[in-house]
Image (cartoon, rainbow, N blue to C red):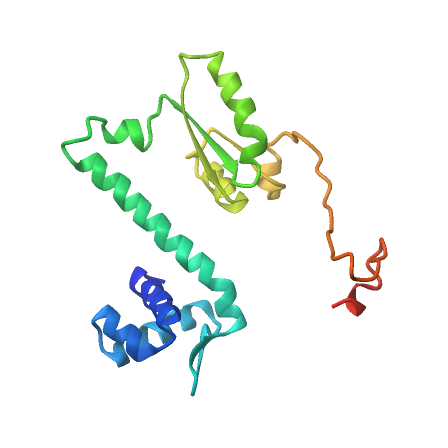
Length: 197
């Protein structure tokens, strides 16, 4: 999966037309169609359907779209940070920003950050000699960064067996199912759930 394919997919969705998207991207229509087809092959599902009304997202395409947008934004953000580090205007070195071995690397699951960030910052305030960097990402990314040795510690939901061997449970969390009050009551064993959909 490459950047051009993601950009092409997003532009097709925005324009609702392959020909208009091709014009906006300054490529030929066959080139754009090829990029979309290649992306669909890599993902193993169709993203768009062509009809007389134009281009419409498939169910899979609707699900994939926010991830495509987020991926492009993340790449753009990394590019902006690295470009500013390389410019002469910024005085900090790569080591200071990217991977300082003297810096505590902390990863927090994005959804858990609001719960734990205040506590972590209060604790770190008591140790001003410690330099640290806190990043937030979804649990799978935090776990992979831990496995690769990029993070010193992480706070995340659940985990793989390998990670569990190196982890300590912090809290037990209950899952809550919310549903419209207009609907019938859902049984605690979910046995009537299929009738509610």
